[in-house]
Image 1 (cartoon, helix red, strand yellow):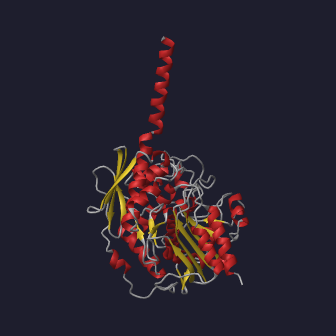
Image 2 (cartoon, rainbow, N blue to C red; image 1 turned 30 degrees about the horizontal axis):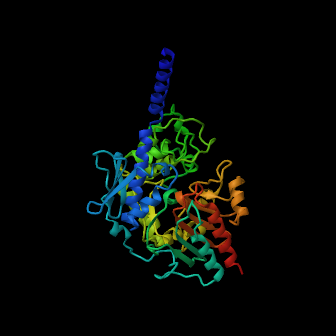
Image 3 (cartoon, rainbow, N blue to C red; image 1 turned 90 degrees about the vertical axis):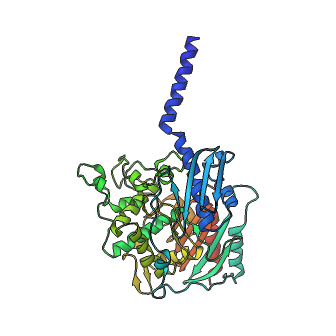
Length: 461
């Protein structure tokens, strides 16, 4: 009996130790944070049905097992969304017009920008980018192109479902075909998730063109300034290419530091900046939203503050490109939430892609630094990731697989969770945007490559 009691005690101690180390409470708070934030953004910014958004959100990896106990509440008067797991581990997201949603942690009010969004969006002169379409839906006139869009929206008989929300095809600067799910139109802003990382790339490209920042400079992070700090050797390019060597690997499990940064901390970069070094900079690649969020803080500091960051984005990027349906969300400390939370219409995502298709030049004006596009699309180490974009310009097996499936070798693309994609196809003079809620682990990459292959075939000759 004494032996059995010792075993029970040892097992109990092991369980307690594991809980203290892995902190399942934090993972559960990440889950409720995802639900509160995404339902808030998609309901109040995109105007989608909250119940439908919730049902689709809890089908995601990591949330599926909790869907029986996850609940949400939306208050349209206060414009807030709450979420909990059986009434515990509550999260609360607040909506502010023009600024989207932000999570509130505890009783502390998050930082709210004082920017006049309408004034930032006001145009003193026409956009540099020529209009890509009129106000009406552009129906494909080519039967093969129409079939390609049919295939992009068709659903399999069984899960995982694709839930395509929008597809836009632009060729030679004009929309030649587009389609939207019910309740979504040409101006509906949709969440890009990690396509927001490509926005950070663009802002850095603008600041590099203006001489404010450079990829080769040491990352201007005060906490790493001491010469004795191994993080002192980290450059801006290491952050862009996710080769910092910091312990910030992302797994989307709720236990990883990137997930906890996004959903548990007001000052996201303030959390990420304390990560220890586990490899020399430039030697090891690991996908990490946290490294992009550090770039967002660098942009904020170089621009002069949160309001100045937002003004820079509208003045130098969105207005010149004619992107009118954009919402940028900020964290609770006033830093652009650069890893995950930009919303824009499918046409606006296409306009963004055209900037890269045209080598960073719009109507003769260079917006991105010379050679910035090729730099961004060049593969990092032995991966198929560039600098803020995924790329086919790589020897990685995933890149080769996409090429075999019909996506050209010179293609590169912004990519976000659930299959958000803006694909730049230089050899085809084309940009293809696909937005939706594909819960397959790869975001339905097979569906994307089929769409690209069929669109190219439909436009040949």
